[in-house]
Amino acid sequence: MNFSSTLIKAISMIAVLSAVSACSHKQAKTETNDSKINGYDVSPIKESDILSSDKTNALGLQSVHFPYNDIALDKENRSILMQDVKILKTNSSVSIQIEGHCDQRGGSQYNLALGEKRANAVRKFLQGNGINRDRLTTISMGKEKPLDAAETEEAYAKNRRANLVITSK
Image 1 (cartoon, rainbow, N blue to C red):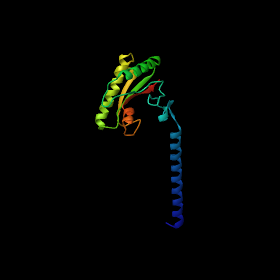
Image 2 (cartoon, one colour):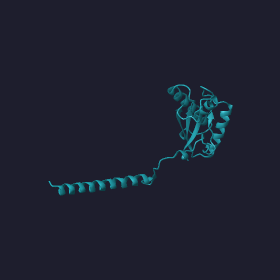
Image 3 (cartoon, one colour):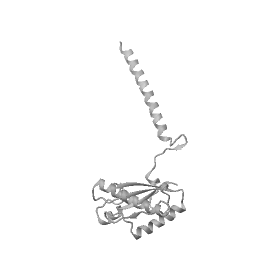
Image 4 (tube, one colour):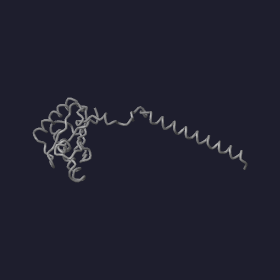
């Protein structure tokens, strides 16, 4: 094999690789720019799109807060939840997810269980006041999503909560 033959093969190989690379690059661009598949919006949900009582952008729904190591709904929490009941009754097509949260103290497993109990306490209250169970889901976030990462009593109090996230309108 002589030099010119080797050069021609090398140039041919570069041309093939360039063509393949261009096709795959074009395909990747098309996939990421297209936010609809078969008519359904498949664009990723941005954090700013989430309607949550923690962000005060969820139809006026409000989060409730709990004492340390407790799931009790005191008089103030029941009053807040009654306002949430009114909003949910007025907006009967809205479904929500109730997220139970804890402060940063304690083990992960313990806080997941406590967060679940807090979410379930809120769900039970909403159901007991006329909100259909089919509109409510619960999840525990444990200590994984604090509103305030500081290690102060004030921050801990903010983090011990159940917030409401709109999942469908």
